Structure formats: C-alpha cells, structure tokens
Amino acid sequence: MSESSVTDRLFHESAAEDSLHAAERLSEDAWQRLTRSPERFRVLTGERPTGPLHLGHYFGSLQRRVEVQSQGVETWLLLADYQALTDRTGSASLGESIRDIVLDYLAVGLDVRSERGLAFCHSQVPELNQLMLPFLSLVSVSEIDRNPTVKSEIENLGAGNVTGMMFNYPVHQAADILFCHGNLVPGGRDQLPHVEITRKIARRFNKTYSPKKRYFQEPVLLFGEAPLLLGTDGKKMGKSARNAVYIRDDESTTAAVLKKAVTDSDPAITYDPVGRPTVANLLLLASLAAGTTPQAVADEIGAGGSARLKAYVTEAVNEHFRPIRALRRELAEDPTVVRSVLERGNELARQAARKTLAEVHELMHLGNF
Image (cartoon, rainbow, N blue to C red):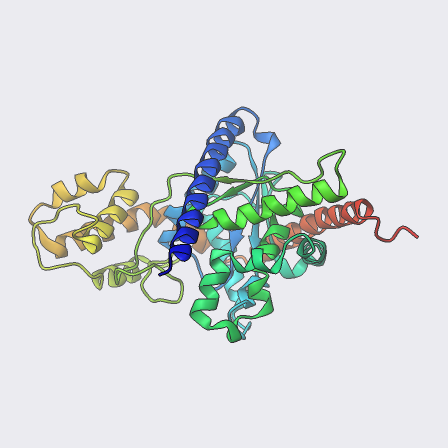
C-alpha cells in the first residue's frame, strides 16, 4: 500500500470517527428534548418487505420504536416495497411480506391506527418518489458512490449487476425521511451514512432554494441500546438465511429452530462473547427474553451444557412472546385489519407528500407560468 493510500485511509477513518462522535452528541440531545417536547418530533423508519420480522428485529429495533412512541412521538413506518426491488427481480411475495410486517407491528405494540402513528407503502405515494429528482440534483455521483451500503453492494454484486435503483438508494431514503419532515431516525451505526446524506441534501436544499427560512430540518439518528443477535448458525441473522426465530412462529417451531443452534462442546456455560460467541449469543437472547443478564443466565445453568442452555432459551422466548403471538393470531383472523391500516396510512402519507412536493416546486420556481 502506498504512502498516499495509507494517508487517505487514515483520513477517512478519522473523519468517520468524528462524524460518529458528532452524531452521538446530536442523539443524546434529541433523547433529552423528546422527553420534554415529544410533539416537536416525528420518527420515520421502517423495513424492506422481504419477509416476516424475527427476534433480531424485535430486540434490535421494534422495542425501541415502541419506547419512543410511548413518549408521545409521532411514528411513521415505511414498508419500502420499491426498495425491496433494488437487488431482486421478482415481486410476487411482496404482498405477503407486507401483511406479515404490519401484523408484527401491531402485535408488538406499535400504534399505526391513531394519531400516534401510521404505516404506508412506497409504491402508493408517488409524490414521495418524485422528490428524488430534485434531491438527485443536490448530490454528486461520487458522494453516492462513497456511501458504504452502495460500495458494499458493488463489491458483492459486481459493478455491472448493481441496478440504478440500488445506486440511488441513499437519495431515495432521503426522500423517505424528508417528504414527511421526519426529524428522528432510530437506528445503529450502520444507518449513519444514510442519515448524513439526508442531512446534506436538506442543508443544500435550504441554502439553494430557501435561504431566508429553513424549509427542511436536518434529521437526527437516534441511537439506543440495540443488542446484536446472531442467527442460530452463528452468522448474521437474516430473513432468508433460515437461521432465525420469527415473531410469528409458534412454540414448537421456536423449539425446533433453537434446538439446532450452534454451540460448543464445553458443558460449563460461561458468558464469553469473544471466546464463545455462539454460546454468548444464546445467553444474550435468553437474558433479553427473561429480563435479566447473560451472566445471570450462565450462572443459573452452570455445568448443564448446551442442552440445558437451549431449553432455557426456548422457555424464555416462548414465555416472552406468548401474549404477542396470541394477539398476532387474533389480528390475522380479521382480513380487514392490514387493509385498513394501509389504506389509512397510504392516504395520510400521500397528503403529506403532495403538500411537500407542491412547496418544494414553489421554492424551486417550478410550474410558475
């Protein structure tokens, strides 16, 4: 590696660390302010509908959304069906995935049926997607290309297989946040580049088209305690990896999945995330479900080995999710529930997007003839 490339790498690492520290300070300030004035905030977050939600989603993000909404913060949840097409060619399963996710939202306690929140689909809000055009004029190709998500996809798929939709994913996500004037985005460090490019677009729009009065707020990434759960194979938990327990799973399915979880041969159960990551992962899951600590679970199991550990995890998970799953089954029996949630959410999102797009056009002097 040349001296110049080493210098460039160190510069980018230092800049990334500075960005992270700045984002953490903004997040801490937002947490304090939202407890005092929740009405000043609106959360925008959501999912790509590529399958039902699993325990990693629940403990990693859904619980935090419920917490923020319980503070009185309006919460808008996006089912990003257009973005589900960025790296796949088929769409036949989208409807089923969207239905699953809405039922998961309702079952875990997210309110998307009152003034506290809503759920909507990308494809049903054309004005949101139209905002991408002016936003694309505010960022360069090189700025998009440097986004870690885009870079990762180019590396994984090869430059010739990355679609234009995938390449423009960061700008599309900026439109998701800004069309409804969202100013809080719950997430982890991996979301920071997306929020930063959204802040950049908001800042440049204001400077170029609304210099006297700020039109778009710069959203804040809202950090929180978000434990990272691995799949039962010790790899990243994923919807398509067949290594996850899903919120919708029944108790026997949960037991069967956890029984296959990878552990090790040491019968003495200890919490060692570095030396024994798969055992530590099960201890973490058990502690989250039981409301205790991984160390406390390890102490209780002692020399019981992996069989006792898996039995403990299974019992804790099934106990924790029993009322959630019961409510989900009840909701699923009514075919009008998901439809009514999305009809309401799509219409409210369209109203907001129409207003924002009209105001953006006026500020940009478009259509003034």
